[in-house]
Image (tube, rainbow, N blue to C red; front, side):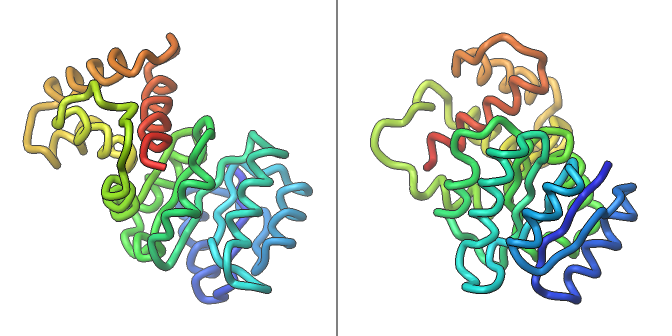
Length: 216
């Protein structure tokens, strides 16, 4: 799979190149600003764009705006945002209304190379990866009419872990339950959210996106 990287920190960018190459990606281009990112995506048509939230010249939301443009103009390119801190508004801007192939992680996650590579591969394949701290803060903001009100507290917990990108085995380990119990909870979640019929993985992504829309 082919990737492009947009990160203004040269040292981190070098590290990201090495990690992606370890994961079997071809890094087609690397850049330090949003303009270079858009040019690289247009030229190489990558499977994945790894994007810093804040880049030159303003160091505000250049990465997010570029990511949104990528998702509109090149929907076949998945986007994984990296941020130094949890920035809820930017997460909501990117995640709301998307169809998978999206992620938002804190940069500190790169230190756990195996977990980071798993998240990168999942997003590149059309799934989701949301940092646990982002999930926690989005949940704290929830208010008003809850579109997920039919879910039990345990089902909400399972769905939040799904949003982090955890597998059934990972969810089971986190909740200290069996995988069969997790599978049952997920089936209940999919049924209660009235999701359209599709293959299992796609319905799982739709459930996560419904969760993210409900927290924005």
